Length: 272
Image (spheres, rainbow, N blue to C red):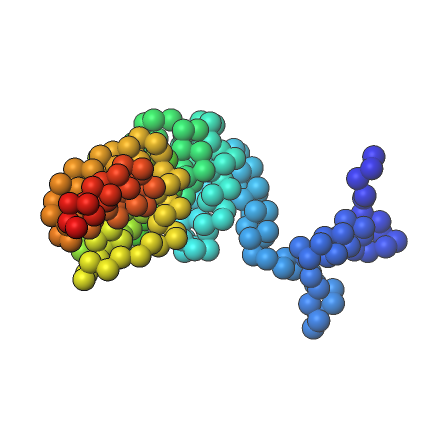
C-alpha cells in the first residue's frame, strides 16, 4: 500500500519522478515527452530481467539477442543472467547454448556463481572455451586466459593449468595475464609460470614493488601462498646477486615472509 502508483492526473507519476531525482532516468531536451536511462548498465539489468522470463517460457529471443550483439554490449546482461539462472535446469540448458555460439559469453554467465551450474555444464562450457583457444589467434588466446581468472571452479583451474604450464606452453606475450589468473584462482600448479614474471626478476636486477601485485599475492589462497613461498625458498641458495637469487628474494618479499629477513641477515654477515 505504501508503494506509489501511477497517477494519471500527474504524469509521468511519482515513481518516475523518484527515478529522475535519483539520476536513474533523464528527459531529453529536444524531446520532453521522452525518457531514457542515464546509465546503460541500468537498462541492461532491465533487459536481463526480461530475458529471464523469456528463457523460462522457452522463447528464443534472448539467445538470439545475446549471440548477435558484441561481448561488451552484452556483458552486464550475461552476468546478471548467470546470477538469476544458476541452480535452475533452464540455466544449464541456456548457458550450454550460449557456449556453442560464443564460449567467452558463457564464461561471463558462469563467473558469478559457477557452482550453481551442474558439473557437466561447466565441462561443456570449458570444452568449447578450449576449442576456441586452440583455433584462435594470439589475441583470442590472451583474452581467454584473462577471462578464466574470473571463473573460480576446478574446471577453469584445470584448463588454465593445461594452457599455461609449463611457462613455455603459454602463448607469447600472455605470461602476465596467465600469472594474474593463476594467482586469482590459486592454481598451485601454475607457480612456476607465475615465478618467471619480471615482477620478481626484472632486467638489470633492479626491482621495486608493484602495489597491485602485492595486494593480489597477499590476497591469494593460503595454499598458493605456501607453494610460491616454497618456490622462493628453494632459490635462496643461489649466489647473491644472481638472477635466481633476486627472483627468490622478490617472491618472498611480496609475501612478507619472515624467513627472508633471516636469510638476508645471514648473507649480509657472510658477504661482509
